[in-house]
Image (cartoon, rainbow, N blue to C red; front, side, top):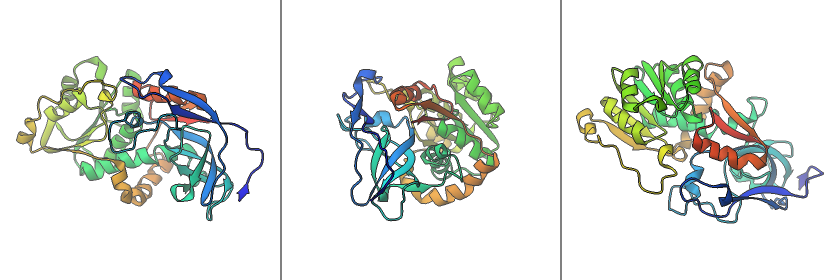
Length: 340
């Protein structure tokens, strides 16, 4: 095994201790001190430098069956992370390499080399591999281009448009020839970001009035594509404004993640008959075959500045939980990342 000296005696990691009911509470979690793990055969020890917090993690805190296994009570939680290899028992990954993996929510992780992807800190900032060039970026790319079958000239509406996925969806649509891109966000500051920096044609604060009315004003000729990150009243409004043969890609429904009772569905689903519209949910894990094309196409846009991104960075593992709760509240602009 190759390693670097002077590892700390303690590894801090976040555990789920109680399954949240409704909004997660701090007492549902515990920041635990544990030993720094020793990597086994075929493993590397990674000192995490940046970890990701994402809305989907709320679902993993429930015991309900879903597309991802629930977090185990009393065990470290998981999530995207990027860090530096400080010890290696694996061929092909050396001490000093940087890798992307999914054992976040902790300072040090023993990672199977087969589940670690080497990344280049000289090609792009390490944090971008958790966001604009990582899973959230691929989510935007696959959802817009494959699930929603975007084509040049489409009018596109994105909810949660100042978030990590939404902001990228709108910009990719513009770069690929959308006729009009409309976004919703939860503050006037975020609306200005969409218009002034991300190049959206129209944007509105969903707290200023009924979403359906604001969408009709922003898209008087309707929308061809709706990229849904919110659900609820946004989904109903999009169905109401959907053009003939419109497509809706359902990425997330953050508005209902903490509900204790099922949320009512849109009241206007019958309109899909009139518009011959289509609603399709998707998971980024089904579209990793697009990863090479995604990096080839989006990487140069990021490097040239054509595709802009924002990150909200919270410092310290002790603030990992508050960063996650901030995502659920909508405190972040762009990708929420914790720097360790």
